[in-house]
Structures are given as C-alpha cells and as structure tokens.
Length: 175
Image 1: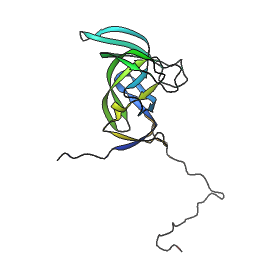
Image 2 (image 1 turned 30 degrees about the vertical axis):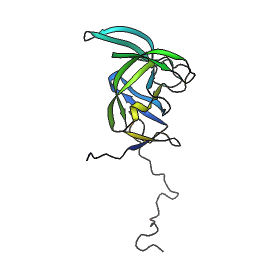
Image 3 (image 1 turned 60 degrees about the vertical axis):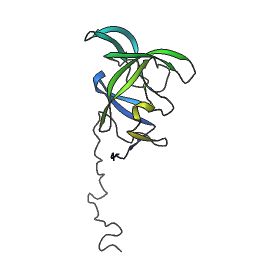
Image 4 (image 1 turned 90 degrees about the vertical axis):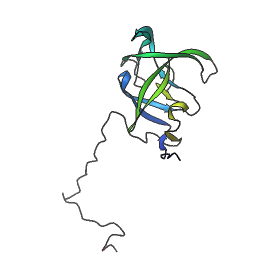
C-alpha cells in the first residue's frame, strides 16, 4: 500500500521563487480555476538551447513595477492553445522550470503570456499544485515570503524600564 503524505495548505496567493529563471521572488495567484500556470513574459525571442528550441524572454516580477525586469532563457517544450478567462484562445509557448514554495521544490510547466493588465504576474494553476497542496481561499501567504528572512519581533520597552514577571493561566502558581 502506498503511503501518502498529508497535503500542505496554501493561501489563494503565495510568494514563489523560480530559480532556473533567476526570479528570486514573485507574487502568484493560486488559481484552481486555471488548468495551467502562466507567467507574465514579454520580448519573447526564439533561440537554440543545447541544439533544441528555446525561448529568451523578460519578466517584470514585481506587481505594478514595469522598471524592474529579469531576462530568462528556457527550453521550449511545447506550444499550446490556451483559453483565457475572457474566453479568447491564444497559442502560447510552454516551458518547464523549477518552482519553490515554502520548502517545496518541484518542476512545473508554465505558459508564457503578456499579463501587463492583470493583477498578478503569475498564476499557479491546478496542474502545478495537484497532489502537493490544498488551497484555503480565505487566507494568503501561508508559507511565508520567498527570499526574505522572517524578522524577529522586538520587545517594546515598558514604562519605568523593567518588565513585570507574569504567569500564564494554567501555570503552576497561577490564580
């Protein structure tokens, strides 16, 4: 009998890293209504990588920032007709790349499309999360912020310069 590990819960938006593409942090919308994942890409150029078809493209990884861009290259694994949320079908290049979400690292297929007017630079579709995660649509960023270390909370000073020693209810000696 095959053992299955429990699926981790993610929010409807999460921070991803796409290390193969040089993207250290990108905010993604987890879209269970979308079969495939999509990445905002522009200035697409056909190239040859290891004797096979490839694509060079640019990405604006930060929402509402069209000045910051990352240039990436990847092998082209396919071109597929994809129907957008507006019902319009377009032929899109498809690449395979590694994704990092929390401490999970796995390969995903991503279509490249211009998403200038969309709220998120990346959609993480059903195929990418199937068998790995479940989605809590009421929560966000459950696995932390990619590429950022968590800040330690500073203790605020107390008037008079000293903290009072307190006990929690249920501890020995609590009333």
